[in-house]
Image (cartoon, rainbow, N blue to C red; front, side, top):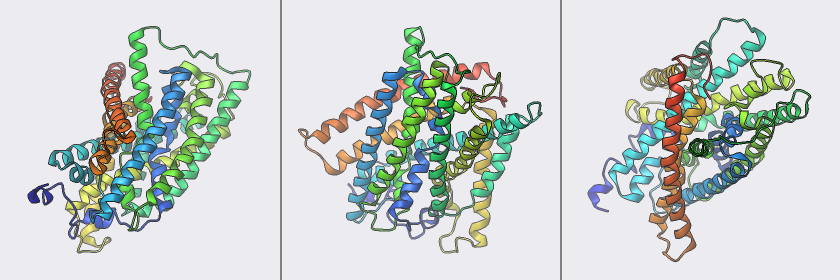
Length: 452
C-alpha cells in the first residue's frame, strides 16, 4: 500500500485527538463484558419474529435456514476476530469496522461503504427498538384500559423520552451491567413465551394449525427470501469490531470466549421460540408472537400475568438494545464534536453530547411513529445491511489477511459463502422492499397498529 494511502482519511490508527475512540470506545472490558454486549446485540425481541419467518419457509426449510445462519454467522464472527487479532499483533489495532475494512482491503471507498451500511443498520435497529417498545406499552395499556384513547405514537413518544435520558451513558463500556441484565431478560421472556405457546397449543382454545405455504409459486419465492432476510437480521450485529474495541488490550483470543457465551444463549432461545411459536400458530404467526398470544378478538391464549411479565422483560431489554446500536452513531458524532483534551463530563463535552444524542433519538422516534412497519424493517435491514457486513465482508477480510491457498478448504468455503449470500442479499433486498412498498400502500402514516 502506498504511504499516502496509509495516511488517508480511512486509516484511523492515530487517535491522540480522537474523542470518539477515547470516550465512546474506551478499551477497558474483560471477555465476559464483550459477551454481554454481543448477546444484547443479537439476542433480542426480534427472536419473537422467528415464527413469522418460518411461515414463509415451512418446517424443514425454516429449521435448515436457522441452523445454517447460526453456523455461518459464528464462523464469520470468528474469522473477523482472527483478523482483528492479527492486526493488533501487527501494531494496528482497529476499533472500528470501517477502519478495519479500509486498511485490510486498501480502499478509501470501502471506508465510506461500511460507514453507510453501519449507519443504516444502527438507525434501523434503533427505530425498530423504539417501535417495539412502544407497542409493548400499548399492549399493556390496551389490557388495562380497552377503551382508552391513547394511540401507538403516544407510547412511542414516551419511549423516545426515556431513551433520550438513557442515551447519556458516555461510553460503550459503561453499558456492561445493563447488558448483563439484558442477557437474563432475554432468557426470561423467551422461556415465558415458550411456556405461553405450549399452554396455548394444548388448551381447548388452541387455534387451528395450518403450515401450508402460499399458493402462488412467485409469492412463495418472495416470502421465502423475505423470511431469510429476517433471519439474517436476527443473527446479525454489524458492530463486532466496535464490541471487540471495548476489550482491554491485548484483546487477542478474548472475543472467541464472548462468542461462545453469546451462541450458547442463542441456542437456548432461538430454537425454542421458533419451534414453539410456529407449532401453535403456523402460517397465521404474527410478526410479534406476543400479539398472536393476545388476539384482538377473544380471550388471551395464555395467563395474562405470564404474558404481562414477558412484555415487561421485552420492554426493558429494548432499551439496552437501543443503547448498544446507538454507540456507532454516538462515536461518529463525538469524534468531531468532543474535545479529547477536556474531561468526558466537562461542560465543553457534556452539552454537545446531550444535544446531539437527544436529536438522534428524537429522529429515530419520529420515524418509528410515522412508519410502524416492524417486520418489514427487519427484513430490509437484514438484506441491505447485515448480509454484506456479517456474511460477505468477514470472509473477504480473512482471505485478504491470511491469503489461504486456492486448494485449501478455507478458501473455497469462504468464497462459496460470499457468492451464495451476495445472491441471497440481492434477492432478499428486492423481496423485502417489495413487501414494504405493498404494506405502505395499505396503511396510513402514524398508524395505530404495527404492520406485519
